Image (cartoon, rainbow, N blue to C red):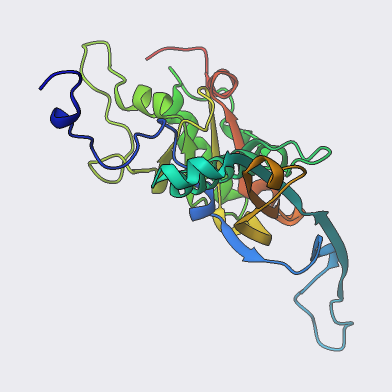
Length: 288
């Protein structure tokens, strides 16, 4: 063979994609749908009085409460890609790869917004903005040699004490690794409070490791209390934009509309943990 390698080529099928983290929040949160641009919910508020033991011929105990209406707007996430018709004609996998790229990018942006969106202008108000800060309560300053594992255990117990029941710990893989690899003064591994050998649970709560969670930070949540409402599910439209037709171009457009909320009465069901600050808050100042 001369003049090239055409007879020796063996091209693998498919295209090698860019390494990206996996979206994870949509799979664990309470997801539903809405038919409006505002997601509205009703909360019980201003509870007064209540049940009481009552003696004979004595006034009965009275209770009362109010209903409060609250709402939040849905937000839109979009991306488009332009491609020439020649490319679509000449590369068999071009259209499928463009669609896959749009889906991946939108799902990742949606996932990011669900976690850390600030709720301003066009952004979703994410878990970070709804969360309450870690508060050890009566356990403050009571733990010798406090560490990340102590923080997680404290957060779980405090949340249960506040009448909420955590379902997930969202944590960076690097922080999860640090907890698992912690050793004592003799170099032996300190066994973290995992309920099973593969470390997928901690203090009875499912652990989800994802690079989308910033190292040094974790979230303790009751996922049933974090509501995601979809106005328009992720979809892809194909058409012409501006001078696409005369320039032999096609536009692929992906779009999604959604909102996230945590009711005020469930605020303590979502806790943001800053490990450094939380460890300092727990530390008793003595060593053991």
